[in-house]
Image (cartoon, rainbow, N blue to C red; front, top):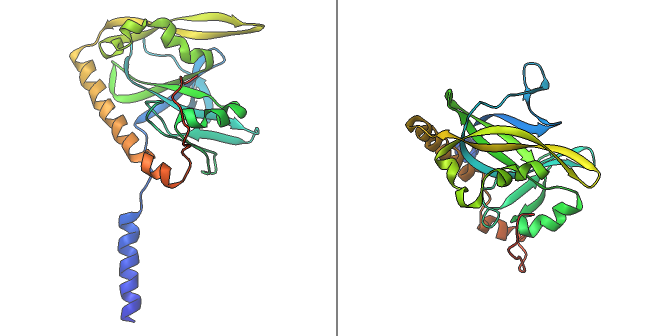
Length: 234
């Protein structure tokens, strides 16, 4: 009787203290560039609706992740990474099964076989609502829009300037026509902008630290390749 009681206490205690719940992402809205507009899922209407970006917004951080479909039935997703060189991607299907895991350079060939490429996530706040972090996602040609918009010398400028959506540019690659967003610098960040920016940077860092796969964990799973080489993301 005592043994059963002791076992019950141990299981109850360790069950509660060792259970790790997946933290909630700080961003409350995820929009994507689709059909030449930004749209986000409306939970109440249960459908995607077009959204309008603020006239000016404060960029908090850029991240990358894998999103897409495999064999037309599996919704593919991954954790966010902020460095292709250092961070580890864990790509899963909607059943939670790990399909690919490793640094992007290591798993890029396998992802390419199933047409999976990184999506760029721009985390931002509206100066009229510092308490809400939002995100818009761009991929393919659109993911390079910021590179086209901002010169390399000023690549750190989002830390000092607000950003605005300037125009939607028509482009053509071969016979394929498409459009992508062009962003430009806007007004200088205010003191309030900087406080909000730093606040949400910390929230994103805490989220990453709570969900990241470490090098040691990856090595234990024997997924890292010995001949991994550094390469550009694309």
